[in-house]
Image 1: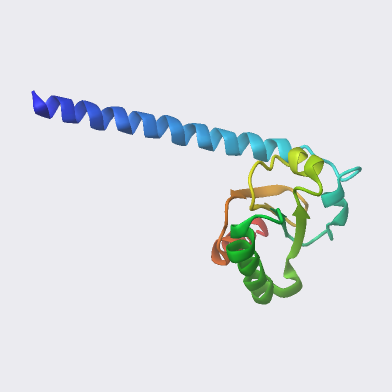
Image 2 (image 1 turned 30 degrees about the horizontal axis):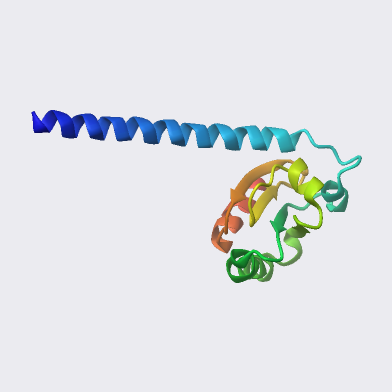
Length: 142
């Protein structure tokens, strides 16, 4: 009898996790699709891009501690590793809330990896280490 309860709980937990993970993947897909429909006619970020180079669009806020202690140092490492191969565009989400909303930013730090054509490849919510950013940029330049 006890074994059945344990198995039920494990199964229930697994199903809940799968539903949550599926919802997260769907959300990321929707965000990526939403951003992909932006065009550079009136978009402040896309107008700043140098065509032919991948970019990291970095949304932060002045009061964001992880932005200062984790994400900014990771971006500095990324810049020292890749140099001018990649563009880093930083946007203060409190100064430009309409841009943050348009790009689907709801937390800081958020980094968005764009390929050399300006198309969204990856969206990272929360601090993202430099090695993961390098990997994502490498994938987006192929």
